[in-house]
Length: 122
Image (cartoon, rainbow, N blue to C red; front, side, top):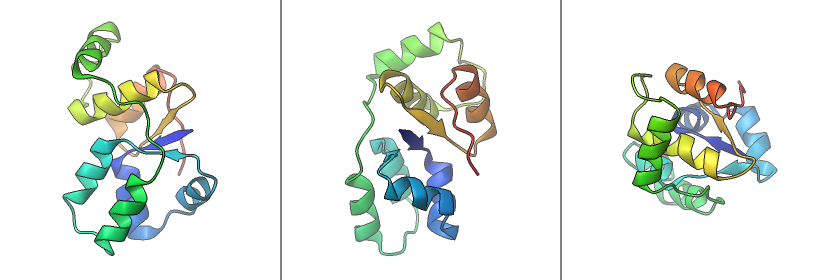
């Protein structure tokens, strides 16, 4: 299963990424509520139906803040250029078995690769 982060969703919503279409069609894209919330802050075409479709996707497990903090320390994720939402997404991948992270963010890619949860797609 794949957790596509906000950067991938923004690209897909602007340019219709064929890879994203393929994985969505196969039901392999998972969602995190922080991604829907971040996207809802932007300008979306067909806003209600787009957000509704995203919210209907299967969700990853959402880590508690204490779990995220523990993960940051345990994996030495501080000073790596990622933010709190990024750390939440990484934690969710780690606690949702078989989930890989798809991102365009360079810092997130480095961290996800180190944790062996990166799926490097176009």
